[in-house]
Amino acid sequence: MAKTGNIPVTLIDKSAHAETAFDSLGFGDAFSDHMLLCDWADGEWKSPRIVPREPLKVDPAALGLHYGQSVFEGLKAYRGTADNRIRLFRPDRNAQRLAASCNRLCIPAPAPDQLIDWISSLVAVEAKWIPEKFGEALYIRPMIFATEGHLAVRPANQYTLVIVAAPVGQYFAQYGRPLRVKAEDRYTRATSGGTGAAKTAGNYGATLKPMFEAASQGFDQILWLDGDEHAFAEEAGQMNIFFRIGNEVITPELSGTILPGVTRDSVLSLLKQWGIKATARRISMAELRKATESENLLEIFGAGTAAVVVPVDSIQYQDFDIRARPPSANSISQRLFQSLLAIQHGQVDDTNNWIQFVDTE
Ligand SMILES: *Cc1c(COP(=O)(O)O)cnc(C)c1O
Picture 1 (tube, rainbow, N blue to C red):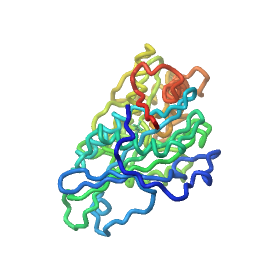
Picture 2: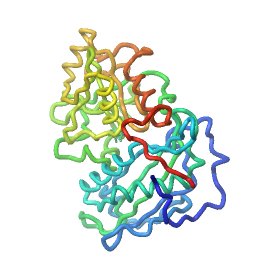
Picture 3: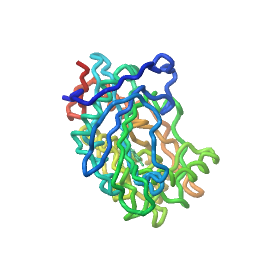
Picture 4: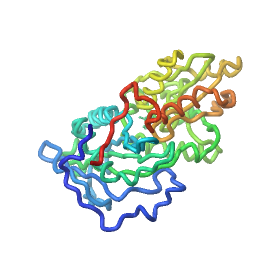
């Protein structure tokens, strides 16, 4: 059980809660009142504290800003539909992944249990910011960056960890229809030996230009392909990608260039528990084209914390449209979406032990 702990809290004078448009929550338009700060210096993470959310004072030569020594995470706190209790979904996975990202970027990682305590403490303080509707949540964004001011390209000796929180709506409501995706055969998100498996700032900055170009061509998202040949599917924007061919669901295997999604892992677990064949392996665009032509490509969907599960209508690859059948009420993606949210909102038994409660005395 999460402790609200012995972290000092400075409460804000005037909450922004009343002025926040809870009827029309987007993703990241509004933030909660407080943040958690913690500093790394002299070899340890020191003095975690919860304070009013405000701009940070940063050295203009901060190494994290200049050279991208910066990592982040994303997870959600949900309200129980029946019991109103606060639930975190698999925070242990996010804490472990943050440590893995830190390791890749030479950042000292907070101990996973410690990080979960800090997240729980902030969520407890921000309890009123957790929306109650099905599919809505308080998105939690831990981030660590190097704050030491220096010019040498080397690991810093000072870091700041900040955790902010944002009430978010049901992501799919923004689209209301399956996504149109462009398979990117020119730009590359990640290559073997690179940082693709880490949630690190530079991976996202590098995708802005390709995303802008895809959007101006009318696409909602990019499907990233492998960096060597641009012939194999990797992931869709900030989501992992799944293909249902006949009665098998396939997702690209974790090869070091793909972000190991918590939602991806949960989807694979649920499919196995439902007796549906679920395979993580390399999948080529040629195979997807064949499956489209033989009408065996039944579903395409993305999975990630922000969107949960989102159906994809089609993926344009060069001159060909890889296309799924139109979504139906008994599609696997719909069942996954409903089931994950039912677990997250405590509507069904948490048989996988994925939920960690946050109690506010
Ligand atoms: C965060 C992220 C995902 C999804 O991971 P979840 O843990 O399911 O939220 C997938 N791909 C990329 C590139 C990401 O940054």
